[in-house]
Image (cartoon, rainbow, N blue to C red; front, side, top):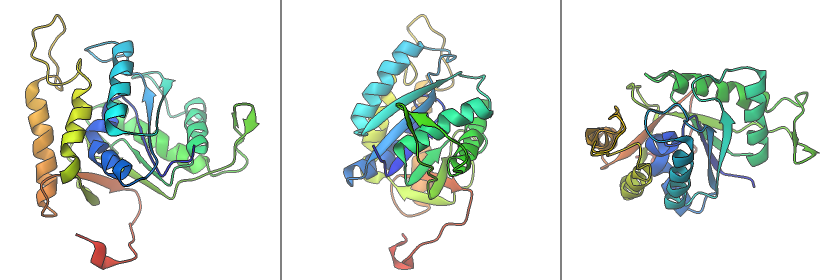
Length: 239
């Protein structure tokens, strides 16, 4: 299945937190959108890899994406090496997305920046014809997306582009809260409270979206960074 937009992030829930509104926006616009999680998030303090799998499926249903896949890299210990790069390359060539969104360039969580670098390197290598990959017994064609963007996560990074998600905030929030073991937890279970499980975290997430939105005079926005200069055909279409 060829996708228009692929969000390729390291943990289940990274896509929803960083780009859930953008995903919902383009799904409604008729674009083919998918999510690829690099790991199962098995090192997370709360929940298990199985509960995260179920929660990710529910979040994907809420957002309406065409496909969600987990590549099964080792949470916390994956490396930007040939083996991991080839896993990413196969996924890129499989879905041939026009645009890829991945993790923040740097962040408090070491997996985020490392995943961003891994995906960036694999996107370049995916366009090299002398790197051969096989999918379902057949050689894959080379492919390189025309644009890669990175989400903004916990560490504040100045965005290069802001996308109005005002009409899709509620769906974004619902997709995040689908991770019932991870977010907005009252703390009356047997597992420890974490930075993201505290209900205050969702308030800060909403506040960040509102802060970004104010920059373009909308209620809510998501911000992204780009590794290259961005061009437009028509400056009158800018907000």
